[in-house]
Image (cartoon, rainbow, N blue to C red; front, side):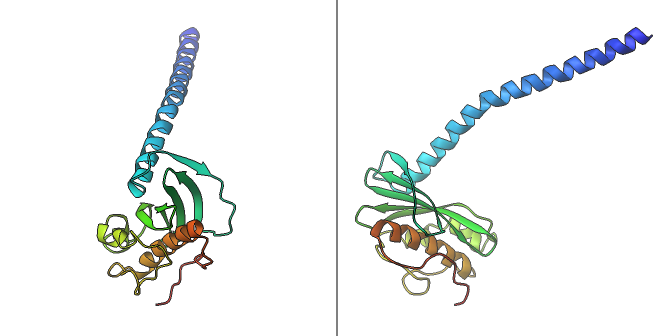
Length: 182
Protein backbone atom coordinates (compact mmCIF):
# COMPACT_ATOMS: atom_id res chain seq x y z
CA UNK A 1 0.00 0.00 0.00
CA UNK A 2 2.85 2.37 0.90
CA UNK A 3 4.59 1.69 -2.42
CA UNK A 4 1.44 2.55 -4.39
CA UNK A 5 1.10 5.79 -2.47
CA UNK A 6 4.76 6.72 -3.06
CA UNK A 7 4.47 5.78 -6.75
CA UNK A 8 1.36 7.97 -7.06
CA UNK A 9 3.12 10.92 -5.44
CA UNK A 10 6.19 10.48 -7.65
CA UNK A 11 4.01 10.17 -10.77
CA UNK A 12 2.04 13.30 -9.83
CA UNK A 13 5.23 15.24 -9.12
CA UNK A 14 6.75 14.14 -12.42
CA UNK A 15 3.56 15.06 -14.30
CA UNK A 16 3.57 18.56 -12.75
CA UNK A 17 7.28 18.99 -13.56
CA UNK A 18 6.71 17.97 -17.19
CA UNK A 19 3.72 20.33 -17.45
CA UNK A 20 5.76 23.23 -16.07
CA UNK A 21 8.64 22.44 -18.43
CA UNK A 22 6.27 22.33 -21.43
CA UNK A 23 4.70 25.62 -20.38
CA UNK A 24 8.12 27.29 -20.08
CA UNK A 25 9.18 25.97 -23.48
CA UNK A 26 5.92 27.06 -25.08
CA UNK A 27 6.20 30.52 -23.55
CA UNK A 28 9.77 31.01 -24.73
CA UNK A 29 8.77 29.95 -28.24
CA UNK A 30 5.80 32.30 -28.20
CA UNK A 31 7.82 35.20 -26.83
CA UNK A 32 9.64 35.76 -30.12
CA UNK A 33 6.35 35.54 -32.01
CA UNK A 34 4.74 38.04 -29.62
CA UNK A 35 7.66 40.45 -30.04
CA UNK A 36 7.45 40.12 -33.83
CA UNK A 37 3.71 40.84 -33.74
CA UNK A 38 4.23 43.88 -31.50
CA UNK A 39 6.91 45.19 -33.87
CA UNK A 40 4.57 44.72 -36.86
CA UNK A 41 1.76 46.56 -35.07
CA UNK A 42 4.15 49.33 -34.09
CA UNK A 43 5.38 49.63 -37.68
CA UNK A 44 1.80 49.77 -38.98
CA UNK A 45 0.92 52.46 -36.42
CA UNK A 46 3.96 54.55 -37.35
CA UNK A 47 3.19 54.22 -41.06
CA UNK A 48 -0.37 55.31 -40.32
CA UNK A 49 0.83 58.64 -38.85
CA UNK A 50 3.71 59.03 -41.30
CA UNK A 51 2.28 57.53 -44.50
CA UNK A 52 5.14 58.62 -46.80
CA UNK A 53 7.71 56.76 -44.69
CA UNK A 54 8.67 53.12 -44.91
CA UNK A 55 11.33 52.78 -42.24
CA UNK A 56 11.71 54.10 -38.71
CA UNK A 57 14.64 54.02 -36.35
CA UNK A 58 14.63 54.83 -32.65
CA UNK A 59 16.51 58.00 -31.79
CA UNK A 60 17.63 58.85 -28.28
CA UNK A 61 15.61 61.66 -26.74
CA UNK A 62 17.61 63.76 -24.29
CA UNK A 63 15.29 66.74 -23.98
CA UNK A 64 13.39 67.92 -20.94
CA UNK A 65 9.80 67.60 -22.18
CA UNK A 66 8.21 65.02 -19.86
CA UNK A 67 5.47 64.31 -22.43
CA UNK A 68 7.89 62.71 -24.90
CA UNK A 69 8.43 58.98 -24.38
CA UNK A 70 10.24 58.08 -27.61
CA UNK A 71 11.44 59.55 -30.89
CA UNK A 72 11.65 57.66 -34.17
CA UNK A 73 13.39 59.08 -37.23
CA UNK A 74 11.57 58.22 -40.45
CA UNK A 75 12.39 58.59 -44.13
CA UNK A 76 10.59 61.94 -44.28
CA UNK A 77 10.56 63.21 -40.70
CA UNK A 78 9.75 61.88 -37.26
CA UNK A 79 7.22 59.90 -35.27
CA UNK A 80 7.02 61.08 -31.68
CA UNK A 81 5.46 58.95 -28.94
CA UNK A 82 3.97 61.03 -26.12
CA UNK A 83 2.05 60.40 -22.93
CA UNK A 84 0.04 63.24 -21.42
CA UNK A 85 -2.31 63.50 -18.44
CA UNK A 86 -5.91 62.99 -19.43
CA UNK A 87 -9.08 62.94 -17.36
CA UNK A 88 -8.81 59.28 -16.32
CA UNK A 89 -5.06 58.72 -16.68
CA UNK A 90 -2.30 58.84 -19.24
CA UNK A 91 -3.04 59.21 -22.94
CA UNK A 92 -0.37 57.72 -25.18
CA UNK A 93 -0.25 58.87 -28.79
CA UNK A 94 1.95 58.81 -31.86
CA UNK A 95 2.35 61.99 -33.90
CA UNK A 96 3.89 61.96 -37.36
CA UNK A 97 5.73 65.12 -38.37
CA UNK A 98 7.54 65.88 -41.62
CA UNK A 99 11.00 67.44 -41.57
CA UNK A 100 9.44 70.84 -42.39
CA UNK A 101 7.41 70.62 -39.15
CA UNK A 102 3.89 69.91 -40.36
CA UNK A 103 1.82 67.16 -38.73
CA UNK A 104 1.02 64.19 -40.97
CA UNK A 105 -1.06 62.17 -38.53
CA UNK A 106 -2.03 61.54 -34.93
CA UNK A 107 -2.98 58.17 -33.45
CA UNK A 108 -4.02 57.61 -29.84
CA UNK A 109 -2.65 54.18 -28.95
CA UNK A 110 -3.55 53.83 -25.26
CA UNK A 111 -5.94 55.55 -22.89
CA UNK A 112 -8.52 54.93 -20.17
CA UNK A 113 -10.87 57.85 -20.84
CA UNK A 114 -14.64 57.68 -20.37
CA UNK A 115 -16.32 55.67 -23.17
CA UNK A 116 -18.53 57.88 -25.33
CA UNK A 117 -16.82 61.06 -24.17
CA UNK A 118 -13.02 61.26 -23.91
CA UNK A 119 -12.77 57.71 -25.23
CA UNK A 120 -13.68 59.12 -28.64
CA UNK A 121 -10.18 60.60 -28.91
CA UNK A 122 -8.99 57.16 -29.91
CA UNK A 123 -11.54 56.66 -32.69
CA UNK A 124 -12.75 60.08 -33.83
CA UNK A 125 -11.20 60.81 -37.21
CA UNK A 126 -12.58 64.36 -37.35
CA UNK A 127 -10.93 65.17 -34.02
CA UNK A 128 -7.52 63.67 -34.87
CA UNK A 129 -7.55 64.99 -38.44
CA UNK A 130 -7.76 68.59 -37.14
CA UNK A 131 -4.05 68.37 -36.33
CA UNK A 132 -2.94 67.30 -39.82
CA UNK A 133 -1.10 70.07 -41.65
CA UNK A 134 -0.53 72.14 -38.50
CA UNK A 135 2.99 73.42 -38.13
CA UNK A 136 2.81 75.39 -34.92
CA UNK A 137 1.40 75.02 -31.41
CA UNK A 138 -2.35 74.56 -31.38
CA UNK A 139 -4.91 75.27 -28.67
CA UNK A 140 -8.30 73.77 -27.93
CA UNK A 141 -11.00 76.32 -28.62
CA UNK A 142 -8.75 78.39 -30.85
CA UNK A 143 -7.16 76.26 -33.59
CA UNK A 144 -8.77 72.89 -32.82
CA UNK A 145 -12.20 71.93 -31.50
CA UNK A 146 -12.62 69.80 -28.39
CA UNK A 147 -14.53 66.56 -28.31
CA UNK A 148 -17.98 67.27 -26.88
CA UNK A 149 -17.89 66.74 -23.12
CA UNK A 150 -14.19 65.91 -23.15
CA UNK A 151 -12.23 69.14 -22.88
CA UNK A 152 -9.56 67.66 -20.58
CA UNK A 153 -8.97 64.75 -22.95
CA UNK A 154 -8.87 67.08 -25.94
CA UNK A 155 -6.30 69.30 -24.23
CA UNK A 156 -4.20 66.27 -23.30
CA UNK A 157 -4.05 65.06 -26.91
CA UNK A 158 -3.31 68.62 -28.03
CA UNK A 159 -0.44 68.90 -25.53
CA UNK A 160 1.08 65.71 -26.92
CA UNK A 161 0.89 67.04 -30.46
CA UNK A 162 2.39 70.37 -29.33
CA UNK A 163 5.28 68.55 -27.65
CA UNK A 164 5.94 66.58 -30.83
CA UNK A 165 5.83 69.67 -33.06
CA UNK A 166 8.08 71.58 -30.66
CA UNK A 167 10.64 68.77 -30.77
CA UNK A 168 10.83 68.79 -34.56
CA UNK A 169 10.65 72.56 -35.08
CA UNK A 170 12.75 73.51 -32.06
CA UNK A 171 9.98 75.79 -30.79
CA UNK A 172 10.20 76.86 -27.16
CA UNK A 173 6.75 76.05 -25.79
CA UNK A 174 5.63 74.83 -22.41
CA UNK A 175 3.58 71.72 -23.02
CA UNK A 176 4.67 69.63 -20.05
CA UNK A 177 1.31 69.50 -18.27
CA UNK A 178 -2.37 69.50 -19.08
CA UNK A 179 -4.10 72.77 -18.34
CA UNK A 180 -7.21 71.84 -16.37
CA UNK A 181 -9.00 75.19 -16.48
CA UNK A 182 -10.89 76.51 -19.54
